[in-house]
Length: 396
Image (cartoon, rainbow, N blue to C red; front, side):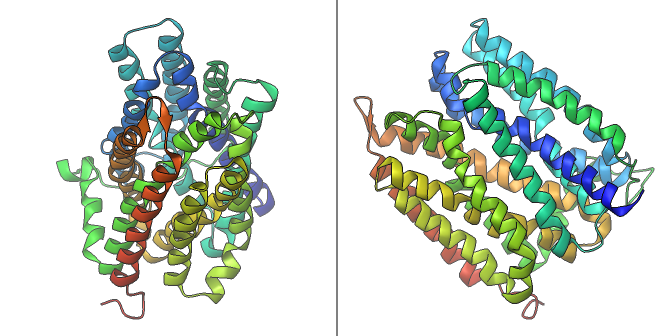
């Protein structure tokens, strides 16, 4: 396989994997509300967090020690499409709250490992992740944006299950793409594995290194306020009478793409600690801007999201690929996903739901108070990282 062909396939994989994610995740809160299940939104979001405690490490251990990541991606994509279609059907047919949540939990269990598996496949094909990963990861952002645009501008489905069913169909496209990828062999093949290795719990050994531990813990803490972005930005814009909400929120991906394309140069010139801190500081500013409570300022704050996300989380993925042994590659990415989507998002979704309720009286939300609270929480995360992270030259 020549290099250009390989890169185009990796770019297409990222693009097509992110498209159905954006198509469903961004309008999710408004779709559930439109079908009379708005009260379930924090719990539906929490199903992803619960699943992140179970499936990513387990699947990551399989990919590192037993099965090809390519095969795992193939069947996870099929299962995700089927489970998403089932979730949409439960809403369409008016099933009970419990049944809807069970469907959402099944979907989350099969969907949560997909991104870390796809990322590990891409990383395995790169000889210089710091230089090559950013532009390829930008293709995923294009895919996410395309999903949002299709929902808002083509399907007009910001509050319709059409968005979900379309996303379910696109997961079959991801499955088909897996046949274009090489069958990557596990990097740490083990015929006999302990129960701890089967569950992927040996990945927790990575936390023994001080800087690894700080980076992972900060990812979890930073994900708590970050979890408020998609569900509550969409609700805020709806309260302000904004049309085509999914398309508006895709502004966040504009700066995300720019940041990813420039990331290699940034990492070459700026100390890693300041790149990490820059992303968190921008998030503090972004939420403070949202507190100004006008559509224009929210659009400005939303645009800053791409920088806030990329400078910490994409840099973290590159950090793990470059500073952790190759045999731990998939488990390291899976542990990151667990701490972000499991620990961080679970607290963020449930805590964000509580904070949203506390800021809402008689059906009217005090959005200034809501976003200032999220900004203050992010500032605390920033202080923790600033004092806890030492950097490669100071690490022992």
